[in-house]
Length: 64
Image 1 (tube, rainbow, N blue to C red):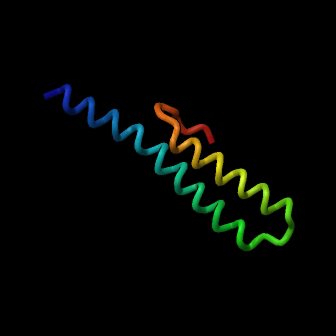
Image 2 (cartoon, rainbow, N blue to C red):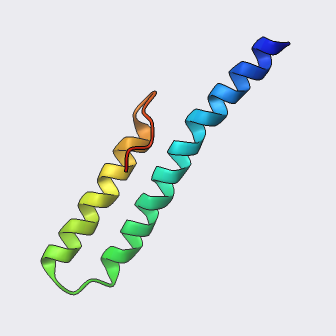
């Protein structure tokens, strides 16, 4: 029974950073629309992509 609990805790702990990164990516994507300068748009696009990549990376902890 303890194996089931530890495996569910593991999957839950890997899910949380994924959700955080996906939420941050969505926020950055929304902010691209309201930016006026090209540089600002590029910055938010890069931020969005980096969070999406981090959310897809297996076994990575939240670093951003």
